[in-house]
Image (tube, rainbow, N blue to C red; front, side, top):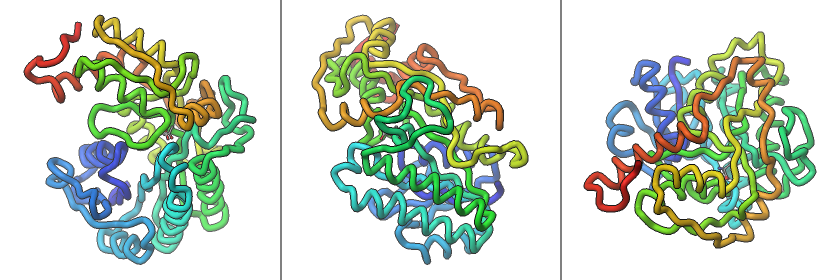
Length: 326
Ligand code: AKB
């Protein structure tokens, strides 16, 4: 990777991945693509080039790719699972139409492409415990349908045209920098904000609902390491299961209470998010990623919780207005 375009650079993953890539590679080659209304700000704007790139506009993607001699595209444009159910046509337009545009530009300009898939690519018929790499993928959400289509289309471009497509199936991602929006796993981010603000948390997901989750630094490392992996070792491409922790709301609540003893939670179920969560795996088997490109997570629930609380305290609570964290 020398010159990289990040499409969706101001989103939850993009805002942190762009900065990580600028730390790892000369910043001048890392282009932050954004859409009007989601302009980059602060460090993201000041630390390197930024260009308007709407994933539904193929000529514009091609123009920016040629201008910066881009060799790798991170395609992070998507509507997350719950919001996609409210706008399924737009979810398809961005998730599949947008990916097709990216793959065609990549084919014509010899770029590698990373397009994340998700635990949302699985469905009710998938084995839910230690979900294997290669298994049944029959999701009922439009988000899942776009993710499975994306995996297949990306593999097709690799086999048919030799485009270097690679990706991972992200679990729910937890970070303190840019909030996610419209996901099923977002409760596991929101709960930390409530804890630090001293507010009671209203959990939309029922006790006993396990989902895979990951701390953002591990997810960013996965996104970089898969693109740097030795291609001769890759049996799979789109997409690898990756995992680091699996918990239900009671487990993360109990963990946060170890550090914020007065924290309270009650259940306020959201039927849409609950139905989606019930259809997703409880835990993924990531053996193939470990064997084919040495994937290994660094954060467990305790390490993530300590880091989240410390950083959110700095971000939201600099004058100790809300709660004390042990
Ligand atoms: C969502 O909840 O929609 C995402 C995901 C797991 O893909 N965080």
